[in-house]
Image (tube, rainbow, N blue to C red; front, top):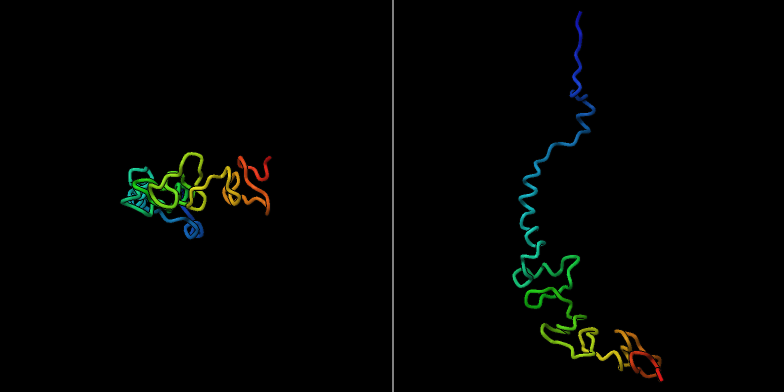
Length: 126
């Protein structure tokens, strides 16, 4: 009389075909080591300018060692180091006084209607 012993760890041929092969994760972590170095903030954009184009950064431009958007940053408006004066905002790379500009009244690209004026950041405020 012959008895067949089935072990609980034995896989059928079909299960073997559908199983996921073992991959060595240490090789993946070794290749990601340099990327993690960039993400921790120890790398600056003056050495690695592509860091600024990554998702979640402050902007695509590198000024000194910081990522900024020169189209909207008040401390680097239009170019690195160009600061807007007190009361001005950076709109499309230009320092604008949004309290009195008819094309940027109260906010960037907020035009007042034809014939009206901008006063205290509101169109036709009397």
